[in-house]
Image (cartoon, rainbow, N blue to C red; front, side, top):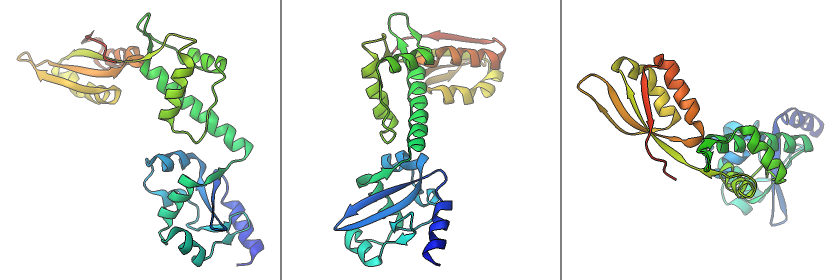
Length: 244
């Protein structure tokens, strides 16, 4: 394949992709990877790395379609395992982003951070969750910067630090005692486990199920609404004791 054809082929692969590169021992190594999965590969959450590459190739210059030599790859990485090399490049190297890619990744990451905080945090003065827009506005007031390649967990910790001088906020979990009829238990069980985790349960002689479910404090209203909807109001819920 000629270089012009190879370059055209490579350009066609770049939609939704980024180039990650590493410079070592006088060599440059580049890979093309789906932008949305860089963070997951860094954190180890993404296992099937090769599924997120349009081409399982280590380049010397990805945009020109120039492949890195096998000798250079062997010298620097001491392996020919593509997934292992890709992980190393992403961990130790740099990622090239266009302005639009960076904006989009920051926007998506900001939405994720706001959602995590809204679902898990409350106003400790009232015990009520903060609306997402309030969190969004406070982050803007704090001029909080989103690093598109920082993990969501780290960003959430940083965001809470930035928010605390502006609004009363705390991450908290609630223990909720729930009583259901035997008939409703089957309908509601998937919701109990998707909203939180069941930490205690038993069946009563009456055929009712009772349990204690631990949920993020920020979703308490959504949780109660879902149970009432599924059981047509035939459910008893009682908040027991918050645990930080």
